[in-house]
Image 1 (spheres, one colour):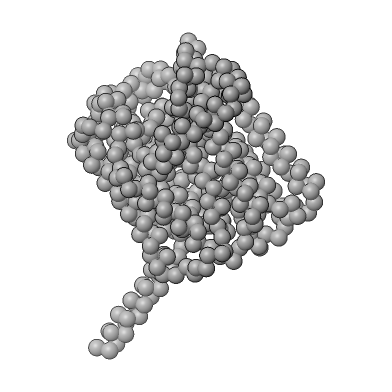
Image 2: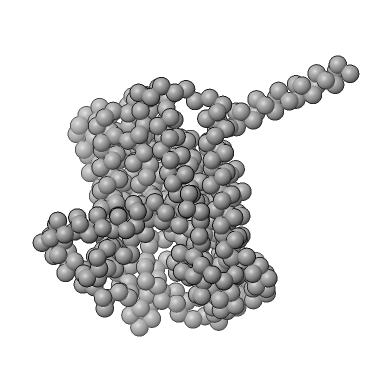
Length: 470
């Protein structure tokens, strides 16, 4: 009897050690939790019900067919897509759900849509009002190509695109948390933030944009703050150039995150000359890629908003009325309540109602975690200030570009900016909170509480989606 009791106790102790070890590894937890709840989100969110998802689906399908640049018809850009996508759209009555918090989808309609064949040869031209670099759609295009290879129905292609997008983000999340020397649990929560996880579980280009932006911040933190990196190796220079290329191939204006380079002390480069030359090469690389892409894409860009705005007028107004523009931003932030809901929990296509407490609970949680998650690494005051300025610069660029591109001069707020646009640079913002003044040693309570909070937010998001559509 004592022998079996000893075996049981040893097995329990081994399980307990493994359990606590896992809880202290955010890079593994983010994959496990993200995969479970990401799959639930992509399954329960009906096709076309992520913001702008129809456009993303059509672009991903075009790339899956090997069309690198947009198709064009009578001066309008877009993609030739099978008409079967329209049949699913009509069957599920997807347009009626956009911005509408009432009405149920019904699982039977989605299951029935699997019976609609692709019929790839029967196509129509679908106009597109944005052209993001193709890197944002690589996982989705691969997923659709796999489904197309096995002659899957169009609804299966959509779900495969979502799944491959999610898997790509979780792989990036693993390496982001693994390489960053600071804010590991902050990045854990950022990847599992309801809006981040929702976008990652859709066909949206936001998924890779957010994930790669977090990865860029983590790599700059590693080179800047890791005490083991007293000087840069040859491979670090290669990775910096690859990082610059990646930042130039995601949505505008997130290439500005390259300014994170200046968090790295110049002494690690050996000389100021090498420091400045390296950044100059990165900047030239970004400029060359961005200009080339937009030169190619400009020929295919459809200015659907051309009737309501003239960019030059907006720019002149901003220069002539700087205080008026500041007042416009202030009014927008006040009306939008700092974009907390849209940034954190505004999932769906303006049609999923999440609990009022969710954005505030998440915000308080990530602020507390960012303050308490620390180690022996020191982030200097100037590095924190620079990180804050990088976030503000990106946020300001987003506001200016959106205001110039989509708003009317008569608008009293900046209408078209969505809170999710401010997610990619969040890694830099939270470095401001990293400190060693508050004495706190992470223990079992911390390692239990943070994953538990992530589970709470994820379960709440999935329940809100189910309640909305079924």
